[in-house]
Image (cartoon, rainbow, N blue to C red; front, top):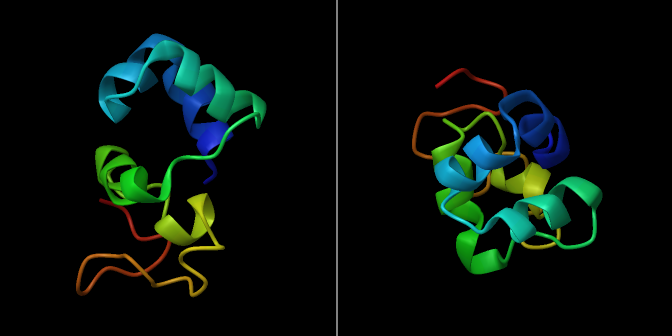
Length: 79
């Protein structure tokens, strides 16, 4: 899942609460104006229950599909 699909599924306000970012930031993520900061990638992924992986958010920082995932977690695996 990508960040846009997650935001559309959860809603703007709920996404902002869960991801612990501002509403304008969520709107920017949804519209592709801004990427999640590299320092926030892991916390955002964890907040989504790993529905979004670090690789999906920032392949430039996490080039392999399993990079940044908790030990034993596989890409696409439910929380």
